[in-house]
Image (cartoon, rainbow, N blue to C red; front, side, top):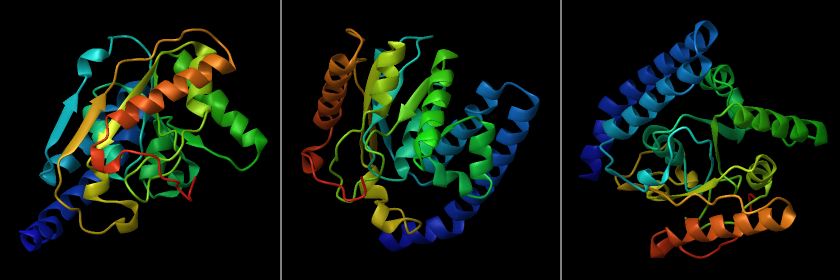
Length: 252
């Protein structure tokens, strides 16, 4: 079955994914230039991500969709298992949002251009002024009523286990008094861990758990830390037993 699945990926999936990536990037850029940036900056990417998972025949289970309130802005925080985190959240969260992503992703041909057109937020740590600008951009997006998806670990795991959370997303939520929604991703590490980037995908079910929103309880460093700790525990508790527990990530 493994050989058949690899042949299927090569002859069927690869051409479809390449063509879909090109079309999605162009539609996003043109749509954002000519029309509603919030619409064209989200829905083409959502359909692209959904298509990739479907064409690879990966089963998906989503739990907790009922926890989200229509019209409410959220700061979503998720564990970062692998590349398929992007497809799972984009395709199945069913919430218009902007990504916070590493600035290096902006260098990917077409996709980087599309992300810029869609006004996703590039995290640039090359100096205090760039870090400050990242924070300002994210704050502006949230004030406009959009939601934000952040990987607080800042990098993908090498082991399937979680590293530590960084403060940035929780600082934003605290400043704007927005609820934080923990997301737990299971299965992405098994499909394609970072040690196997751009190689064969391995068939494995994917699961996205949307936990209860953590509502603001106050403002300041103490409440920010409480929210971060509560979100970390929620994400950790949602992991399958094999990947529970903290393991240091040398890339953090």
